[in-house]
Length: 375
Image (cartoon, rainbow, N blue to C red; front, side, top):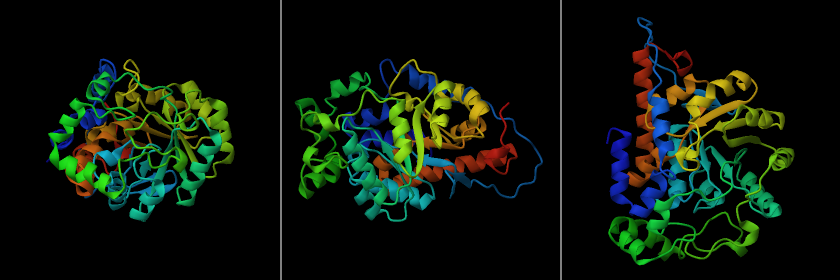
């Protein structure tokens, strides 16, 4: 497998359709996916010749710490359904590649078990705030106890987006084991035995690992109890309160406008992620590549700015960096690697991205991403 498309097709073959489409597709008419691709494909590099660099340097400072390349594994819900213990495998893959991995609130495996399984990983934690703020704070105290210092607050999903394919496939929360979904799973025996059956034998149907024990139910049980429902009324006061007591770095993910980016900075956020949630939330949202220049121009020296959404190649990473992002998050690509080959597959995808970046830098006559210019 040599390209993102190869890993995507391998993931399609190994995963039930419901699981594959959950991680692969967008929302509504999926125009946002097309816009993401067009926005990145429309950018052009300006090569420089005869620069004489024997090798390239992809290392970067990401939230004050050294990383082997300016890439972060994006938080993805239910990665543990893509591969057994998928969140642990992803953390190990990130550690092997020398980059951070962000764990989702809605992961199958709790942060304590991920830390135990990947002690060398540089873990970040993504927060979907619950209705009960005391329970939310208790969760973050657990997170801090595992050594996580970077918190990523996702603010762009107040309600469940319109993803009709999930409804047709019977894939939602709760997971509805209807005949169509059960037949879908049965057609993928390798996944059924290697993922779902292993969970069932070890302790039953998978659950959201971070939910408090008294509210933790299997993914097939009815919707979450009121205290742990995702907060749909999150506001700037919540960001202010979180900044007041969270002792580590705070990144706000899901920012589009310069005005919102300024508020994040004024409230003391250490970073923002300019993101369209991979084209999965608002189908008519502008792609991050169109928004980055204005935000970076106004705030690039005052707050750490990341980008994500639509990354398929190393060239996409370099384009976001050339627009001023300090780092780039990627979610689908590592998930496709995880589905196709577990930890080794995730590592292979990340190595592919790194190699593509290195080759493009050489062709552009650049020693590092900071040397790259757009035409």
